[in-house]
Length: 325
Image 1: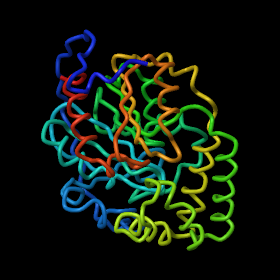
Image 2 (image 1 turned 120 degrees about the vertical axis):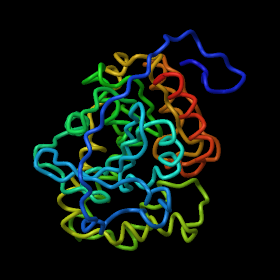
Image 3 (image 1 turned 135 degrees about the vertical axis):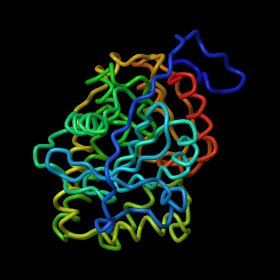
Image 4 (image 1 turned 30 degrees about the vertical axis):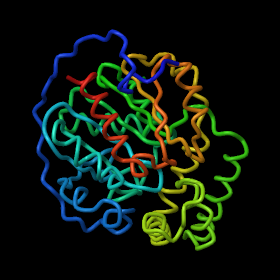
């Protein structure tokens, strides 16, 4: 693992000079947001920045996939966390779209996207679906910035199509197998959600703290909004998409050895210093395998881009300027 090249006092190792390429965007007609029920934080955390991003749909494997599309220039594809949606990227969409074309899809069963395609078996399947999205938009290459499961499928996308992913950032992500204790805990929560067809208040109380820094008041605005979004999820959405995706994520195979195939000079890892489910030592283990740089995000839990948005956005802008221009 190398020290971060993004700290002001740390020089970056020699890197190749990249010529910026711009691609013609396929303009798809916006579809009315009738599917908006179930959007995780569109109003509470997304704010004006999230609402300002054009909202569009395309069809992938027969299902409607919703995505935000804003800005012009080299493409940055954002992948959000499980149980959230693309609106969690609102601060970064606002800043990055001044320099880049930012595409932020909603994961299946999250936000406004349709149900999980039945043939989706693993993280590689999610990566293939995101590749189909890029094809539909005529995007030849892009940077991928993924948090949690977004980083998991982002890594699989970079491994599957290295000529399409020029730059990869994995945030609060781990590609090793889920530790036994947490896998059993998460599978127990998923079993209870599937059986009841809802995320009851006791389940909300168990899930919400996982995503926030220790000691966070669950009644404060962002945790409370997240809890309301969980409780509002409909039975079909939970059983058709959210629960199967959870089992896919937490039952994933160990992919640590394969990470060595990623380009270290084009891969960056970031993690909140107080991330409960994906602590920094997991990030460091992946950085050792890849040989890439790693950045600890101060005063941040699992949704680190919202806990410390200024720090994260600054790091991303520096990284993208180095690797995408």
